[in-house]
Image 1 (tube, rainbow, N blue to C red):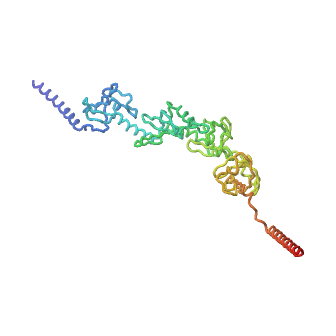
Image 2: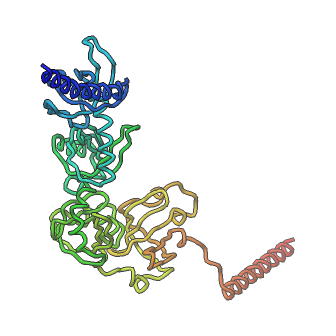
Image 3: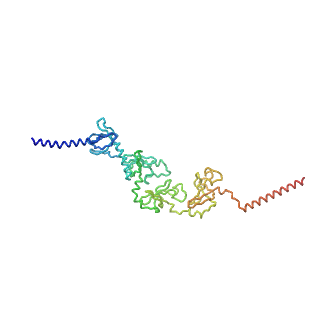
Length: 410
């Protein structure tokens, strides 16, 4: 009997500290507060609700719209998964703590986006819609925006004439697609997320682009012509832009008058900025302005065709290489409001060259200069004076003769 009592006492001593430890642990546990983000464990997953164990001290429930999660981490939960949830109510009609993944997921999603921005990680973004300014997309569960300027040349909408409706059609055709992108701006307070496909492409192409240098000449094919220039595709599927001002030495209004899709051309690399390569076609052509002083002189009278008029004058073609400007103040002796009051596009007129600046590629023309009266020279002044004196003497003799005839008649 004594032996059994001793065993019982020992068991009691072993159990007692365990119970005390458990009570101490419970005392140290803080009961959740409304608005607090808490860690918990999934104990049951239903169709429209999830039951959670909160540190062994109470039970919580997530249901309905509060199951929505922007971070996407809780879309496929299983029993014993660890989750974070926000406390909405301390007790609902079932006696459970009401919790939310939506609030917690929102916070976590934006924290993840901020981290992705800092780490410059490339992410997958799904295109969900488009407007004329760019693409609406999703990163995880957060809706963001990708401006047209942040698209790669592959997806950039090249539309002749810049038809906005056609541009929108092309952008909308990307709906449902997934693009690789980098986050370039995050602001949770303003609910702003901006992503860039071009930035992701730049990172992937860094090694390829590093092979090219400014001054290098490449040969390729025109793949697109837009109002502001033309695109050339060359080795390694690279693409560069020839700005309208770099197509020819003449002033150009429409790049399509000089190049078309499919043309094989050479271009000189004049700038490399991240993934953007700028090319020049005219840099490989002879500069006609270097010989302009051999063809034209200030004071020369020349014929030229008016190419364009605007508020400050008329652009005039003297030959296929040299174009000049007749400023509005040089078109008429009288005040005019527009160049079209004096000259018409497509018509040819006579001008006088009033200035030549070869280095600036400028040549000034004037119609008014041809009508200005030249100041007489000293010799011409003297001759004019003699003629005036001679005329005066002749007039005096005529008057004297008439007086004599009158007296004789009397």
